[in-house]
Amino acid sequence: MRVVYWARFPLAKARIIERLGSVTGCDFDVVDKLGPALVALPGAEALILFDAPVAEARQVVQALTAPGNTIRWMHFISAGREGFEAAGLPRGIVVSYAAGAVAATVAEHAMALMLALGRRIPEIAVQTHEHRWDRAIAARATSLEGQTLAIVGLGHIGQELARRARAFGMRVVAVTRSAKPNRDVDAVEGLDALHRVLGEADVVAIAIAMTEETHHLIDAAALAACRRGATIVNVARGSVVDQTALCDALRSGQIGGAGLDVTDPEPLPAHDPLWACPNVLVSPHFGGSGSKASVERIAAGVVDNLERLKAGQPLANVVDH
Image 1 (cartoon, rainbow, N blue to C red):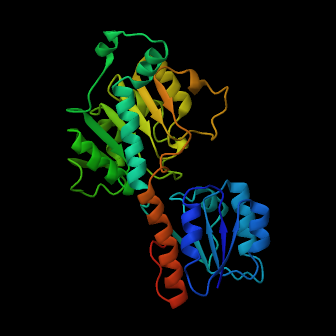
Image 2: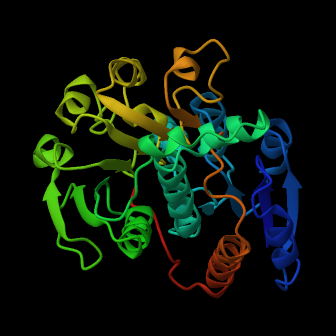
Image 3: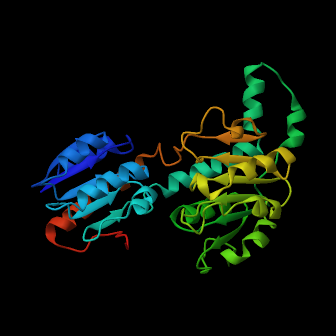
């Protein structure tokens, strides 16, 4: 069996290659760019990949729907597949993904952003650089203990975040599409209760999947519904938040701070107004990186499904498309 691994990003690359090398009867091509990936597809049976921009995803889908295609399994290392879903995931090919593999790491990153904003870490860094001791900063610091966290979206990341937040003594509420009760949170509401829940929260963490329904879910009205001075943390997708409205809310003080691992667009242009907004931390979408445990889960998921495919067994974490 021949496998094409389109390694657009380095996340788990070395470990995936190592694990693929241990699979008997498997040959694989590792390519970093789209062109070589398309060239390698004919004759291969499996494609391992990250999500990609729509224009690139469309080229891959065209190749997979052309006469003579031999790919019968696609496995996404990334949790998101927005580019390929917009292009149209090809029918007749089993699609799976690394469900929850990096959720714990992303949740940890969300906690880091909350803590950094509350404990005034950016200001501390400036004072340190300036060799300046100024305890006036203490009056602006806040603690997560006793605060209410509203998590928008309670998938793998949301649940991991809820567990960590509770360990910090936070009350945790969630807003989900299903409103299904969950033991990791104190209360769960449907999306129709979003504005009411936002008004209860000291911190709002966004971990919901990007769909047509959730595009700009956090808009000017949602931000206005937040408790004044609330903190916003986004580890989902940049387009879930209306960034223009967020900038306005930050400048007015309606939102007291924002920690963003995702933006719209990415990379965030140097001239984007978001950079100049007060009390903002922007990390370059690396919330899922840095964990050996996550890397092992990603690589194990690839190999497990490959072995299942070879044995004719049902695959894990299959996407309904």
